[in-house]
Length: 212
Length: 259
Image 1 (cartoon, each protein chain N blue to C red):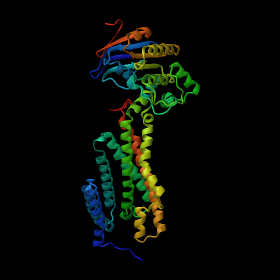
Image 2 (cartoon, helix red, strand yellow):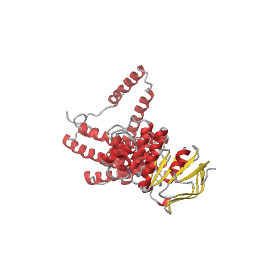
Image 3 (tube, rainbow over the protein chains, first blue to last red):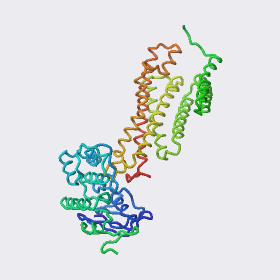
Image 4 (cartoon, chains in turn cyan, orange):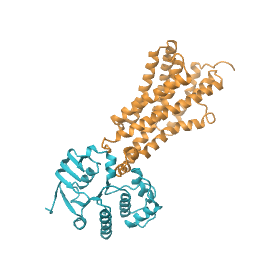
C-alpha cells in the first residue's frame, strides 16, 4: 500500500526501501528519537521527504491532493490537541474538517463506550486528564472513515491495563472494518501481540523481520 | 454669523497650549512619553503645512498625472506604514499580499466611488479625488493592519490547532477559518462602530469640515453617507483580499504549515 524509495528526511531518516501492506496491522518499533513519528508524518503528508519518493497505492504522494490524502490516511498524533468546547464538539471536529455531517448522539455515546471514556458528549473537554484526552482523540478518529489509520503511541498516557484494553479494542475495530493500521509504540509486548508485521526503526533506518 | 472664521497665526499657536498641558501632565505622572507627544505634534504641523501648499498648487494646476502621482504616493506611504508597524513579522509573501490588497482593493473602490457615485468631472479633479482617496486609503490601511495583526497573532497562538485540523483532513482554508473570521471581525469593527455612533455620538471630520466651510448640513450629510459607505466597501474589500490570500502564505503547496 505504501512504498518508500530511497527516502531521506534531513538527517533524521534514511530509508532505501520500505513497504507497508494493506489491511494489516504494522508496527513501527524503536527507541524514542529514532524517526518513527517522522515516518507517520511522511505517510500522512504532514511532512515531505527531502529526497526520494513515497508511493501510496502506486501513486506518487506529491501527485495526491494533501487534504484528500489525509482523509484517506488519518493520523492520531501522540499529543492530540483538544479543541475548546464539549466532548461532543471534539468528537465531531474531524467530521467537520472533512466536510462530513455531524455524527448522531447515539454514535457519539457508542464511540465513547468503545474507548471506555465515561463521559457525556455534553461535558466540557477542558478538564480531561492526559489519558482521557487520548481516548477522546482516538474516538474522534474512529468517527472518520479513512482507509488507513496512523496511530502515534496512542496509549502513552494510559496505565498498562488501559493500554491493553485500548489496543484490544482498536485492533478488533480495524480488522472488522478491513482497515490498514500503522502504529508506533515503544512497547515490545504490544508490538508483538497486536501486529501482523513489525518494522524496526533504528537511527533513522528501518528493517523488517527479526529484531537485530 | 456668515462666512468662515479664518484662524490667524496667533489663534493656531494658542491651540498648541494643549500640547504643553499634555506634556506637563505626563511629566508629572512620570509616563515618559513627552518626546513622542512632541514629535507627533511637530510632524503633524510640518506634514499639514507641506500638504496645504502642495494642495494649493495641485488645485490650481489640475493634471491627470499629478493626481495619479499623489495617489501612488499615498498608497506607498500607507503600505510602508503597515510594513513598519509589523517590523520583521511579515514574510515576503505576506508583504506582496498586502501590496496587492491595498493596490487593487482601494483603487477599485476609489474609481467606482469617484466616477460612478460622486461622478466628478474631469475624472482627475484633485479637489475631490485627493481628499476622498485619502479617506478610503487611510481607512483601508487601518483595516488591513488590524486584520493582519489578528491573522499573525491567531496563526502564532493557534498553530497547534491549525496543525491538528490539517492532520484531521482539513484544507488550509477550513483549518484557519476561525482565525480568518476573527481577523475580519477585528478589522471591520472600528468602521461599524463609527457608523453606529455617527451623527449621534460625534460628527465626522469631513462633515464637520464642510459645515464649518459653509456647506449646508443636508449636503454635508449626503456626502458623509456616501463616503462612509465607500469606506465600508473599501475596508471590507481590502481586508477580504488581504486575508483570503494572506492565510495561504503560511502553507506550502503540500498544505503543510511553513515553520
